[in-house]
View 1 (cartoon, helix red, strand yellow):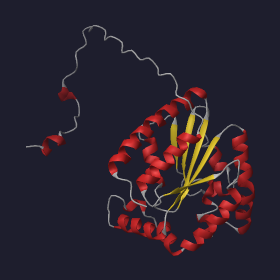
View 2 (view 1 turned 30 degrees about the vertical axis):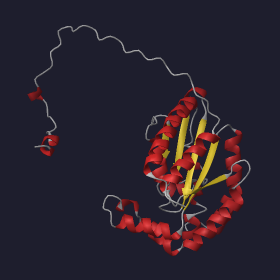
View 3 (view 1 turned 135 degrees about the vertical axis):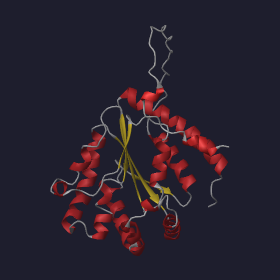
View 4 (view 1 turned 90 degrees about the vertical axis):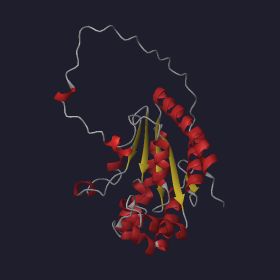
Length: 264
């Protein structure tokens, strides 16, 4: 499939981002609770999609949750417990950059959980998600799919780019040698958790631009939002001065004008 050209991509992305702002206002005013799960292969483009979604949104309404490895205390909790505290309240959106599905992916493949813990997750996860939906949470789950060749190409790009090397963890590199193990884990995960109440939506992500456009358009089309009436804003008149005098600039620590060195 041909790569989506930049010009139509940027035009449509901006239009969709405008609708995301409108959807955010609907979430805020209606008291809706929206959770969007981002899962998929390493370097499949989850982070890039999240970045484009949040670019114009209010961080007080739309939060990104990317949890680190669990602490010793968290390992003794009910597995879903560390995620429930991050679920949205009324009028909030939560984007999960990886989620409770870590147990069905990296923990399963790398042996970070026991077979009993894994089996329990597959039983409990559909019930957990059904309870969320029954309580009124709007839950959307996206799987970003990328080929092994494209993943390797993106890994190599990160290895030679000092601005993106931080994205490449030892766990990412290990995923190359365990490609089929991750494939089998994904297939089993889908077999248990792709349910009518909480289905998975697969995003073909060989082309990052196309993936972002398709995913955002689907999200906007699947959430039952409606445009809300724009708030009328009026800038108040500035009151007359009442004798205030600004202290001399020399009294403060001023940031040097580095920008002046960039021009002749």
